[in-house]
Length: 52
Image 1 (cartoon, one colour):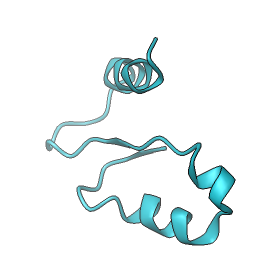
Image 2 (tube, rainbow, N blue to C red):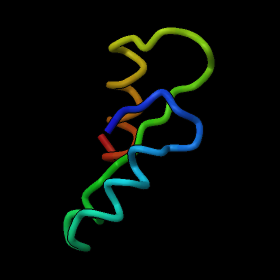
Image 3 (cartoon, rainbow, N blue to C red):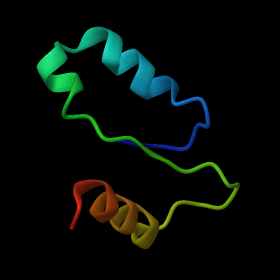
Image 4 (cartoon, helix red, strand yellow):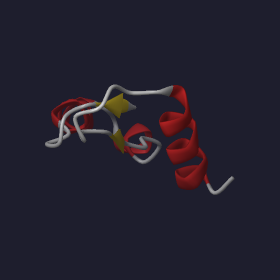
């Protein structure tokens, strides 16, 4: 999940509503430095979190 919110509000809401086995699969990529999101930022962070 990618969100541009420093408080990770969407992630928090999803964790409340999802079953525990699905919550364990969530990976949050936060981006809130004031710049627009770009594909490289997302893919690099995703690869880091997944150990690729």
